[in-house]
Image (cartoon, rainbow, N blue to C red; front, top):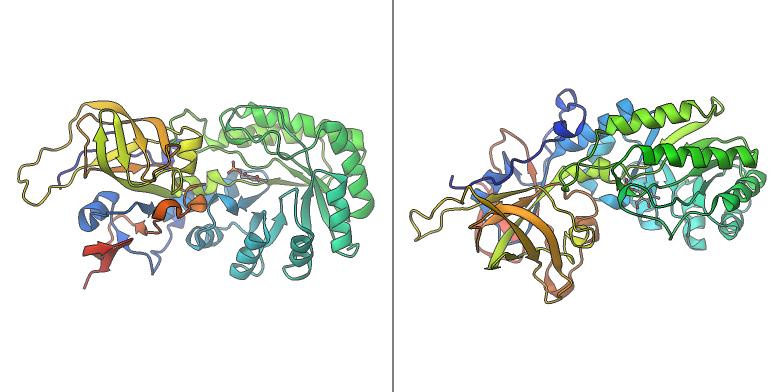
Length: 433
Ligand SMILES: Cc1ncc(COP(=O)(O)O)c(C=O)c1O
């Protein structure tokens, strides 16, 4: 095969993830399977973006949290609600879920009737609260105002089995993606809300979110100390101390410590708090569970100097790559083309590139910069790592562009699909006979 890799694809092992070998998932029937990304590109020559799913990365991530986080880890399904992802995480042992809408509540409950669901959106409609409680058995709700406590009490008819978790706001920390401002209350208000919640709920908890893709474990230490001060001042007996999401993944162009470094800091800080023995410790990872599970393969449609016009963008699977200026690790591939015998392999010299997505909107721009072979051009493929979280989850159909194509990468497997001649839309795969 005639392709070059500009940057080797980083594996989860380099990021401090546990080995998946003992828990290797069975190949899932249903999705087209290929032994490698290169094998998929060669066989399919896809005209649309393709998510290449790596099931073992989901198992590794799940086992890392289950084996090393000092408490329960609730998967924040907003990061990737694909049933494929949910099923593999659940099979690997994730049985607690952070849900933030009635749609998410319904989806998880239908897939896993026994799962533990916590409704972690601090602003919920009355209908969602009532339905979550009565139809789907949700008992845990987060709040950051007195009004939201009132809504929960009223819509559950003063239920005697509620857990109300107060979300404390956070100052700007070391996260690449700050979440300050929208949710979370000031410490003085959190003290009052804990006292109010303790009067109406069977159990109370405290949570925060230090921001997504947090780079420094010290951000959790600071947040835990802020939280502990609030709990001490409130005088309530805490049932849940929830350190939120925010854990980072590799492959987005920044140096990160291994996840175990975050867990060590959290374990030490929590031990120093002297919480009651029955108090549960929770985390709500989204990105760290789903982010590594997908490599997105896109195609270059045109080159203008250092700008590549590619077939996916901010309205598709790359919203965060645009809004957060991620610099994903990339690999480039060039296929031989009919009638161009001897087409040169990609150059070994690299250069920096920016991308435009396929829509006509000029905000559909991915500044990167991305490191790629300096002669990359129309028809070449680019594989972007770390696209499992907040990518396909926020895809739109704006301007007529939408791609749902997902394949599974299982090393050693015989390809189940091949290229469909004259593909229409995303239907560019056909079963191997
Ligand atoms: C309440 C809550 N919990 C957890 C998460 C997941 O965060 P992350 O993907 O950074 O782990 C989010 C993300 O927005 C969130 O809002």
